[in-house]
Image 1 (cartoon, one colour):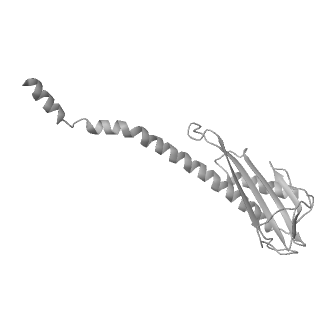
Image 2: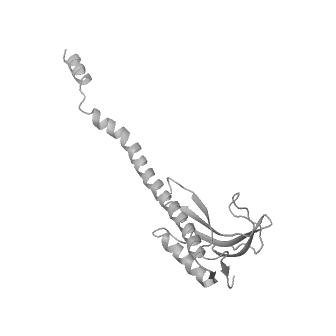
Image 3: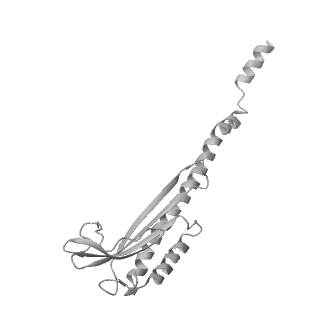
Length: 178
């Protein structure tokens, strides 16, 4: 009777059930938490890189004439926008493109970490972005995001963004020494 009474008492005992459930769920919840934190960091890096591309195009589009020193300063501002992320993985390029006879060609280009486009290089623009004789500023940025928690995202993720903006004060922004 004592053995049977002991087994029936243990079968109905639920005092340790919550601890066992927590022990089973805790690793999953902790991994989910760290995964979401890492996703948010990557997303923030990607958004900042997009802001860099837009800001570079905006600052260049406001000028009538730029020089390589001006463009280098604008690229430096782009690096400041990426903070607190490392700027060594940020690559930028800005180009002035004009459509002539239905073909968009580069007028001038300057890169920071990216090679400049060649003058008269044909570039593919979105359909109906500019008409013949019109100009546009094309700003490109890429960022190689390396996760600080390599066990969740072991490889490097490359983000890229292209931003198009028409010159604001002139028909075409000139570069004095590009």
